[in-house]
Amino acid sequence: MHFVTGGAFNGKLKWVREQYQLDDLEHTWISAYKGEEIPELHGKKIIVLEGIEVWIREVTRSIPAAACREKWQSLVREWIKWESKDQERKLVLIGNDISKGIVPIAPEDRLWRDVTGWVYQDLVSAAERVDVIWYGLNQKLK
Image (cartoon, rainbow, N blue to C red; front, side, top):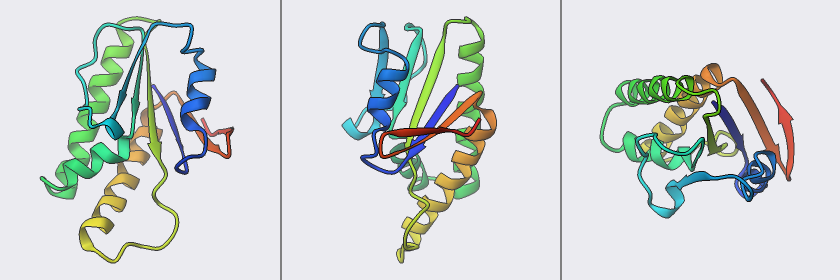
């Protein structure tokens, strides 16, 4: 599993496309920004899930923070299991860093920011590779 994060509009998508040469390879790209749901993983060797923070926000609206984090931990376990069944499988997760700037005033926005931070910590812990993209440049953290 590869987790890619960074600021909005900082080149994460372009970097992932170039890193994995996705224009040449068969892959699946699922985007929360387009209203797509988190999929059951199957099929393609490379699957990109874009907009992790959007899916986290949806979950925080319906269940408590602890349950939300547990739900995401369960998803991560499923994703790792999917990857482990074939050496050529790769899951790439892309999420905007929403932890910088002013702390939101609205309680539901603060909750979303907090849960996103916790989920990202879990993703970083589980991922075999982690990159931060700022202004189109990557910094490999793991």
